[in-house]
Length: 192
Image (cartoon, rainbow, N blue to C red; front, side):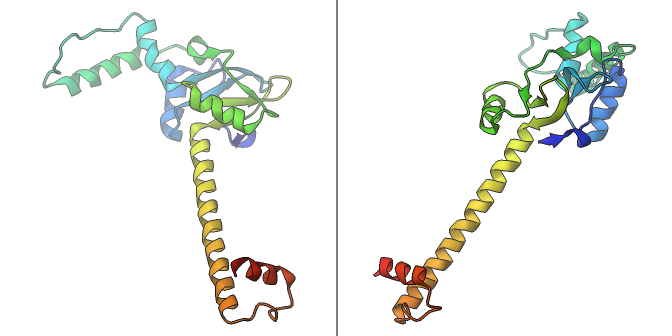
């Protein structure tokens, strides 16, 4: 989870242009929208900004099965038109108000399940008063899963080394004399 101190947030009065600049600069795909007291009022994502085109009535529907040779240029022009439509708009016009959130005391497993079973890429974490305290993202879930996997691999390696050492000790008949530790003797008994 990204904690409050490290969060990148915007306010409803932040211009769409400023939000776009922040998205690109920080290499993120969205952020929480807060008021002056850090109360969560919404979320805004790159998807919301892309949907601005259809909200503005500028969506075109191309029915050609095969793209034109200059489709990249057309795509570039469409993006430019979209960006021009954002002029003067603020995040409050586009944000998703009352987003799905988790409380700071929510079970982590439940939060992960929500991320994996919904379309959401991030879940704001709020306290009992609705103030933003953090953000859980799908990236956080992937990082945690990798950490668990690596830890599990290390544990398996250690178990293998210990088992190998105990077999070696047993084969040298040193079970009862090593450090006087009963646990090792019990392991040796197990491997006989």
